[in-house]
Image 1 (tube, rainbow, N blue to C red):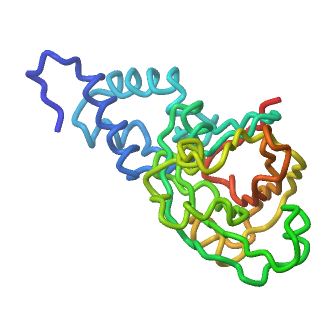
Image 2 (image 1 turned 180 degrees about the horizontal axis):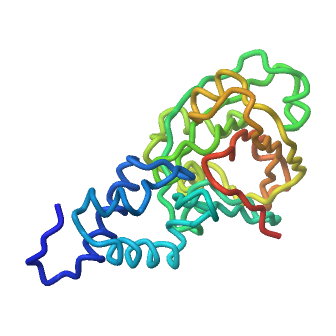
Length: 243
């Protein structure tokens, strides 16, 4: 495990092992690290070596010390800009130096959508609506469930790979529409995770989560592009809205 003959200092070897255990989820975000005495025995090194490795990880905000409680893994922070520009989840992850991914939960054409949904999209009675629901991950951590509803002008999304590609990027590359979205109405409220939300986000039922409801507009044609419903941003990460 620790090579005393290596040219790499012992404290750096210990540091790399701790980081590897965090990335492999042996230690969960906000979880407690074993006591320094246990770590010294585990890696067969001195307490001084352990303390130096931990000190560097604290300085790098990977670990945090809590007086009288021990050393804990720091939660990752996740900032979402609160601006008029409509940003995709992929773009937000990129700004947070995280990798976005997705799992498709639903993709269907609503043949009899609610009148309120048609009103929001400014569609005539009898119109069909495309519904897309995905579970979004940041660095493989489940963060939020997204549900978007489009007019059938966006029916090309029915065949698109929405798990490995950014939905906005697919839309921008399609010449059938000219979507340069801006945010219209939006509301952020606190809700509690029901059984389905808790299962997908891997959190406890009734955990407080943020619920984001919005409407994006096509800047050029000045008409609604899609409704947006998101629920999540729970206890997995520290979440901040940036103004």
